[in-house]
Amino acid sequence: MNIVMLCNLGMSTGILVKKLEEEAGKRGLDVTVHAYPMVELNDHLDGADAVLLGPQIRFALNDVKKQAGNIPVMAIAPQDFGMMNAANVLDQLLELMGE
Image (cartoon, rainbow, N blue to C red; front, top):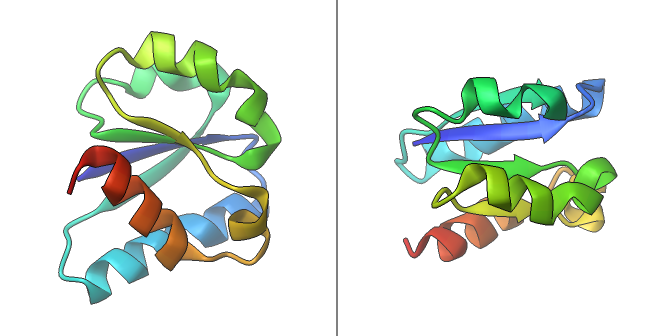
C-alpha cells in the first residue's frame, strides 16, 4: 500500500512516517509512506492508495479530496499526531479504506 502524507515537512512528520511503517510491519502489512508538501500533491497521486493530511493542513481536506478523486483522504487528528499514535492513525485509515 502506498500512502502519501501531505504536510509542511517538519521533523515530526518524518517521525510519524517511520512509526506508521513500523506499525504496518507489525501487522504484516506492506505499507510505504512518503511525506510531501501539499503543493506537490498532483505529482504524487499516481499510484497512491491513500492520502493523509497532517493536522496543520487539515483545512485543505475538501480541496485535497477533490484533487484525489477516488483515492481515500483522511486528516490525522491533532491528538494522534501529537502523540505519534501510529496505531490509531493506521486503524482509522484502514477503516476508511474498507480494509
